[in-house]
Amino acid sequence: MKLICGVVAFAVAAFPLVSQELRFTSGVSEQEVFQRNPEGVADITFGGVASGRKINGKMVVARLTKGGAVVPGFEWEPIGKIQRTRWDGELRNVPTGGPYRVEIRLGENAPVSAVDGILVGDLWVLAGQSNMEGVGNLIDVQQPSPLVHSFDMADNWVVAEEPLHTLVNAVDRVHWPLNRQNQPERITGDLLAKYMAERKKGAGLGLPFAVDMVQRTGIPIGLLPCAHGGTSMSQWSPALKDRDGDSLYGSMIRRVKAVDGRVKGILWYQGESDANPTAAPVFEKRFIDFVTSVRADLGQPNLPFYYVQIGRHISNENVAQWNIVQDAQRRAEPEIPNSGMVAAVDLTLDDGIHISTPDLKRLGHRLANLACHDLYSKDGDCGDLKRGPRPVAAEYNPAGFVKVVFTDVNGRLDSQGRISGFSIHNADGTLAPRIYKATVDPAEASVVLLYISGKLPPKATLWYGHGKDPYCNLVDAADMAAPVFGPLPIQVH
Image (cartoon, rainbow, N blue to C red; front, side, top):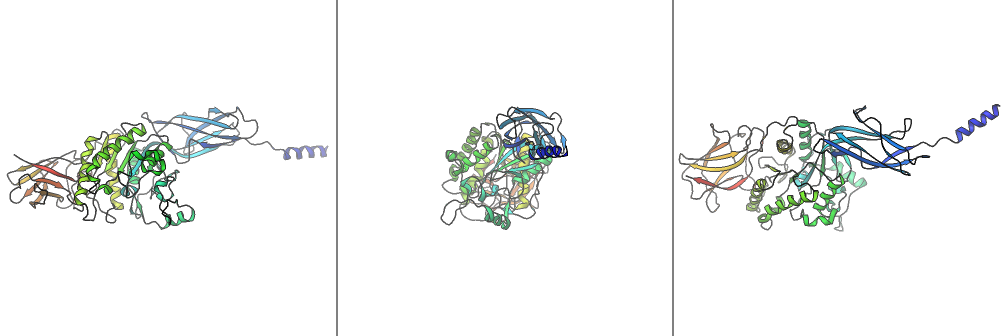
């Protein structure tokens, strides 16, 4: 009898039951951010494979948790049956927030598989050239937030941290550096680790923008870095979209479609490479056509598009064309619905052309002000923000001053030290030194008075930020800077 029992015991040990397991293979990744719909929810669709005995036709159940607790309304529920070894399911109307954990299993005692760190919020594309890519010194950078994630250039969802852009290991060939044979080559392995460890620059405005938005609204943010330094509007041409990952435009569209095809908006900083005699005259049309094409190709005709007017450059080449691009960007704002521009001319640099890390944080804050004003006015701490100073008119007063009128000013115009950046020019564009004092009008918070010496030249014009390296410091109470503008006719009555 003892022998029989021993044999039975041995038989059970030798032939254990095969466990039944589920595995995610598509639809959801750790740290992924899902774009919420206008109702503030998202449907999370996912699928995978199953292993074990007699699993065909069995029901997969799922639930959603946050911080170890079940999200109300998302307790264990059936989501779909296994077809042979494949299964698919969906959690509908997941509310804005996170980080969430999606758990799945086959039964009460079956193993649980899970995906962690999921957010539901808003996705923002970061595109343009180097000042969007980020060339700020990697010193005192913006600290990460658990509610800000990034779809990095290797197509992986991660918690966002500086530097966001790593072109050298991007999925798309258009971003790869050239090797010794002058061919694009992706950097991987030890070379990539060495590159990242030795990198000294790479801070940008995207992470400061996102962290600022989360602090104001509580809504999670997902970033899609797509920028590439030194690139022109022709290199971003929508006509190249069929090249997919071999073109900047095609790469950007591919990456958006890889995250379900919908985003909240686009942040854009580009124009420096178009400040030349050939590209500057057609910049405004190319820029407007670009925005129109992006919206059409993403199927979002009202997609918000916020951009930065190019700032300073320590150079004396193509000075006129630099100002042409800046004023084209200013003029384009009212021509492009659901767009907005912020100025950068007053900001400090970390080299001859790239915004410094501290002022990239200010620039991110300025873009957040625009987004809050237009898209989140009822959410969190956005307040009643305006777009920032926009020039309306310049009027000469025979008492000896020019009255410069701005609109969209938050509070009162101000400056650190005396107001600087304005200049008067002759009809032929040459400088006509006249301004000896500039002050904010004590009676009108949105008006600057420019006191002039001598007579005003015939057909004189006004500039703010003329040249490539002006000193400009006019801002409003929300730190929204006055943009470069000119030539603006000075009205004489």
